[in-house]
Amino acid sequence: MTETQVQTGFGRMARRAESFARSPWTFIDQFLDLHEDLIYFGNGAPAAERYPVARLREAAAASWQAIDASALDYGELKGYRPLRNWIAARMVEQGFAVTPEQIMITFGSQQGIDIACRLFLNPGDLLIAEGPTYIGALQAFDAYEPEYMQIPIDSEGIQIDLLRAGVERSGRTPKLIYVIPNFQNPTGVTMSEERRRALVDLAEEWDAAIVEDDPYGEFWYDVPPPAQLRKLSGRVIYLGTFSKTIAPGLRVGWMVLPEQLMPLALMAKEASEVCSVRTVTRTVHAAANGFLDQHVEESRLFYGRRRAAMLDALAEYMPDDVRWTEPGGGFFGWVTLPAPLTASELLPVAARHGVGFLPGRFFYPAAMGDDRALRLSFSVLSEDRIREGVRRLGDAIRSAQSLQ
Ligand code: PMP
Image (cartoon, rainbow, N blue to C red):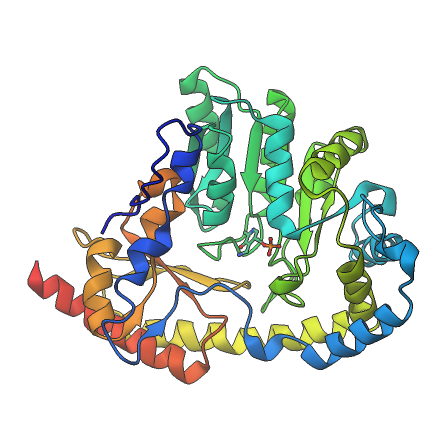
């Protein structure tokens, strides 16, 4: 089965609809029932055990007690003021100069990506992203039909010399630069301070905007990551979210916007959402206030143990010629296979061995990128399952190599 199997019966659809016909899950799902007890490393959500259900129930009850008719009207396009105050105060505490006026609440950071595209991209505009990058960002970008330039990353993040050379060679100037500097999805890599400075300098030179997507920055397991890009430059649109620290089903995130972009961003948000989700933002505020710091600290220990389980198992079970990243935080590791094996070829073999993952090519536009690598998410699986899954992966790689 390919990834583009949708027949609509309508012959005159928008060109962008083609991008929505592609689904990585169509390809992957066909393998997941090849084994009755498959260990699936493809799920990048937080662990269910870390959803603070009791706290959210209490917070929802308390916040609904205080809700009257006026809070159920349209309004609060920018977001619930006490929540914006709370986010700003917390970011200031973390060394980030931001005011509540610069913050707009979004429907998850995914909406922030979409709003940035609405404000900056015409079809054919040059968009820079890390190669590989987050699948959901590619899904959002595709609808705006940019010309992609993906720049390979190494252990210090996006390779600035390749970026500069690529842009010079193209003879064009990028308009938008999308990066995940902390514990990147999918590689787990963190951008070094030097590269952060070089990137904001380039954006200045090119008059480009940077989207800094930061869902994992708080989940560091060794040392905190370097300063956010937003601290270094006013050209940066910063995206934060409660999806990993509390729960993704709440759909509450935020954008920190340069002042002059705020009026446009508000109208772009109004065009799709009319106003913010007034009830849930009250619940999130009541839940986070006086709770989140401690919760995140516990999450660091929790996910840190899972990260260690994955790295220990990789060291024990991978064949000699396999390489992997050593994430300092976040949810992901990136495993590179020995040539000529590709991750898409390995997946059916791996599924028969009882293990699944996301092949590398899905982290590139139209799923057409380097397929030598694969992403392992360690967030949702127990340490025992991680260990067993990596053991099965090692066996599957040896078995696939023997078939070649
Ligand atoms: N950006 C990145 C890099 C992500 O990994 C994710 C979630 N997987 C998102 C954005 C979307 O997050 P949200 O739930 O806040 O929309």
